[in-house]
Every structure is written in C-alpha cells, then in structure tokens.
Amino acid sequence: MRPFPFPAAAPPPLPGAALPPFPAAVLAAAVSGALLFFGTGLAPVPWLTWSAPLPVLLLAPRVPAPAACAAAFTAWAAGGLNMWSFHREQLEAPVPAALAVVAVPALLAAAAVLAFRTLLRRGGPAPAALSVPAIWVGGEYLVSVLGPDGALWSLAYTQTDVRPVVQLASLTGVWGISFLLTGIPAAVAAVCAPGPAGRARWGVGLAALLLLAASAGYGAVRLAGPAGERRTVALLAAGQRGDWAPVDTPRGAEKLGAVLARLRALPPGTDVAVLPEGGFVTEEADLPRITGPLAALARDRRMDVVAGVIVTDARRNTAVLFSGAGGEPQVYRKRHLVPGVEPYEAGDRILLAGDSGVAICRDLDFPALARAYRRSGAAVMLVPAWDFVRDAWQHSRPAVMRGVENGFSVVRSAADGNLTVSDPYGRVLAERGARTRSITTVVTAVPVGGAGTLYTRWGDWFAWFCLASAAAVAGWPAVRRRVRPERRSAGGRSRDGGA
Image (cartoon, rainbow, N blue to C red; front, side, top):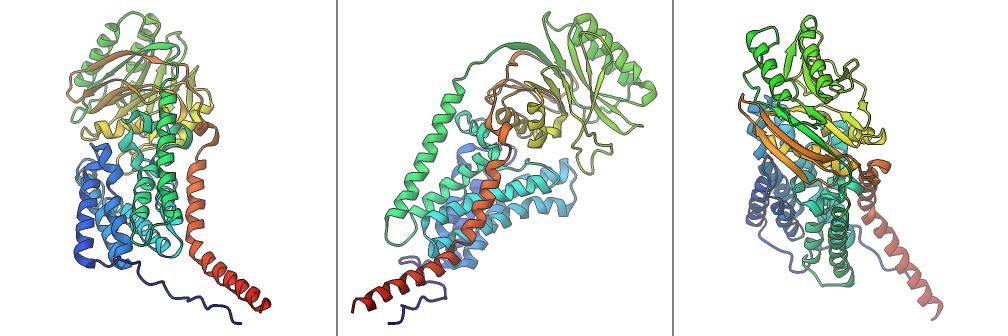
C-alpha cells in the first residue's frame, strides 16, 4: 500500500481567515504604527509598547503574506518617525543614516511577522509564537554588535521606569525585556488565530502567563533586596549649547571659577563630585589651569572629583579623576565617540579607582564595557555626560539599565540633559535637568555595595539563545514536512502487515 502523499505546496488558508487584504492591512498598520509612535522614542508610554505589535500579528494569518509584511513594515516605519527630527536636527545625521534608523527595525518586524504567519500555518502556534521574539531579539543583538550605536535602540528602555519588569535585565540583559515585549503579543495572536482551538494553542497561552508571572515575581523579590552601605555624591552641570569657551578665554575662566565656588559650597561629608562631559575645554598647554585648582580643591576637601575635560589640540575627550587623598590625577579617555560629531581619538582602557569606575556618556550605551567594569570590581559608575536636551530622559535610561544588568549604582551628570543617580535595582534616587547656563546641583546618598548578577557572569547568553531559536524555528516547517510523510508511511506498512 502506498503511503498517503503529503503535498509540497503551501496549505490552504486557515478557516475563517479571509479578510479584505488592503483595508485590513491599512487598519492594522495604522493602529500598530500609532502605538509604536507613542510607545517608543524620546518619551515613551510604557504600556503602549506591549500592545504595539498585536494588530499586525492578529492580521498576519488572515491576509496574504505580502499584505502582512507590508503592514508590519509600514507600522514600524511610521513608529520610527518619532525619532526622525531628532536624528536630523539634533544629531545632524545624514539622510541615509536617519533612514537606516527607520528602515532596519521595519525590515526586522516584517521578517518576524512573515515567520509568524508561515509557522502558524505550517508548524503550529508554539513555534509561531516563539519566532517573533527570537527574530526580534536576535536582530537587536546583531545591530548592537555590528552597528555604531551599541544597544541604544532596544525596545527594552521603554520599560526602564517599570521597576519589576526591568529586573529581568539582571538575568538576561535588555534582551529578555525585549523578548517579553514582543513575545507576549505574539502568544496572544497565536491563541486568537483563526482555526480550531487545541491543546497546543492553549499551551502557548499558559506559557505566556507563566512567563509574565515568573518575571513579575522575580522583579518583586529582587526589589526587596538590601540597600547596603551608602556614599554621598554630588552632581554639578549646566547647559553648554552655544557656550563653548576654552579656559584661556574670559568666559572659560568665569565657568571654571563658578564650578570651583559650587564645589567649595557642597555639604561637609560629600565623598565624590561628578561634573559633566566637556565641562572644560582647553589646549594641552593650558591644561594646568584646570587640573591645578581642581586637584587642590579635591585634596583640601578630601573629596574625589571627576571632571570632563576636552583637550582640543590633542584630540582627547577625557574624564579626569582628582583623588581626595592627593596624588596625580587619573585620566580616562572616552571609548565610544559619536560618529561625525566627535573628532577625537578613542581610548582603549577602563579607569577604576577602588570600587568606582569612570566612563563618559555614550560609553554606557554599550553593555560589554559596563560588564567589564563590574567584572573588574566596580560597584558604582561615575559618568560625566553631555546630551542634546530633547533626549534628556531617553539617553539617561541606558545608563540606568546598565546598573540593573550588572548590579552597580550609576552617578551620571549630564550637561543639556538630566543629572541622574540610580541604584543597582534601577530605582532613580535623584534626577534634575540641566538646561540653562546656571549650574544645577544634586546631592544624594547612593548605595555602593553592589549586587552580583547572572548577566555579569554569563554575558549575552540570552541573545545567543534567541539567535539559536530563530534558526531552529526557521527550519521547523521543513522538519515537519519530512517527519509527517514518514509517520504516515510507517502507519501504512503496519496496516499492510496486518492484512
């Protein structure tokens, strides 16, 4: 008896799946695009991010593949326009670079939706639901490694102020949070897909609920951890746009004098003060005008001082650490420069003084550098920074996330941004904006005990798991095509033998 032939062609549409493709795709793209526009970007609404992928995922099995892909691409491209003016006007990014910021996530979303549709029709709800977060997180990770901006565009930062959710980063890095943000909507869409309900579909729904419950439970437990020893820190910064003044000019000398006066006025017992990136500008010959007074003040007050100093003729963007115990200043050179904006030479070393690490602004957009600091013993990061006003909140949050990932506190003093102090659990202990030329000061106590994390030890293991999962689900339909005829053939031989 011949085995039952298994067709190589695509299966017929799912029952009840037919929808007018064009209007359905337009509606889904419009809703998802609006949710992404307001759920991501410079001032995201966190709960919108969770629901943003759902309309296009619900659409996917109900319309032809081109319509589903077009809806996904359009939705993510429309959502990405919330950063267009920032990249073009503030960062002065060329048009191709700004287009890439919009197009790359849109292409990744289209690929994830196409995989979801294909696997739902060929492989079942479980691999379909897994494919979306696996492809998305795998793409995020590859962009973070291969692109110039590190992990800056991850969806995870939209949740930074949602404390229980963000604790997951201590296990998985930002990748686990992005997995939740895309995986939960994918599971809902798989459960709601047209066709008869079955155990596999309800299993996907149950797995999603358990994953959410486990994440929330872990977050609650971790947030209940002890605060530990604290140290008093001060942050001082002012707006610097249009106020580029080398120290050998009258304005530069005035700025130095104002900072020194504010440092002397800090409360007794202040252990460390952090000034902004680029707070002082000088040529090599005039560098002692800055280092001399700051070193003397640090020694007299027995207070460590970290100051951002740009040395123009030597092409260095540095953070200089003046120890309260005296001795020669220690110099850290920024390692991750803004392409096309910073004409300096990148550094290649970390700076660790006791349990305090020093980095500059964009350095903390790169998880590997933060992980290296924690592995070297840093329990608190001192970070001079310089933002672009509009991104004050948005660019402070990657630093907060690095603290959660690695279990250290972050003291970030940003000109034209926010002065932000956060603990190892992502709690923002103090935050104030620095926009005008008047110096803004924040003084607070910050935990310095540190908290060990799995992410520090294992690194990007979860991102690699997602890459492997994406490869596995991509091959799932082919495996099923080979296995099902073999099973039917075996069943046919058994019946023939019993005749």
